[in-house]
Length: 151
Image 1 (cartoon, rainbow, N blue to C red):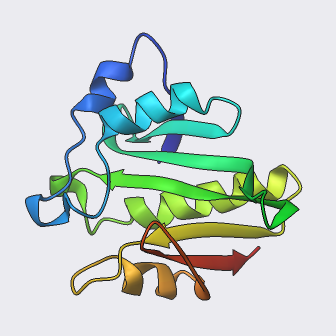
Image 2: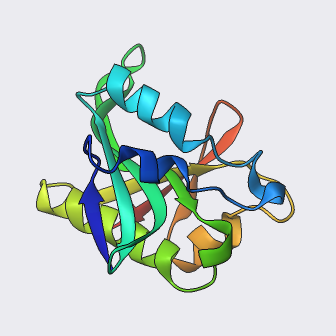
């Protein structure tokens, strides 16, 4: 497994990544994510998740983004912004690999904590992130649970 930078040669492969229909309300599409990556290019880190030559998913991390400048201008965070694993590829360890890769990159850039958010609902990703060591902070962001993991 490895991550691959999004390039003119492979960006269309990213568009093929589709989560299960029952997950579509939990994560935005790759198309929207790449548009946000362009708008927030100073913070966004979009990558394909690959197994050999096969694209199995998409992730987008964020680095050193000002979290709440109106409350604390020094509160800058990094972590996982989006995780889309193709429906037919789920349950094979690609999500865990992606989260660990983001945490490794946060650490490589000098961070000691990684953040993630999720929509709280039955069947949502909360158990997955809790198993990976994230713990809710008590904050919410656009109705989503904010969680952190020490790295």
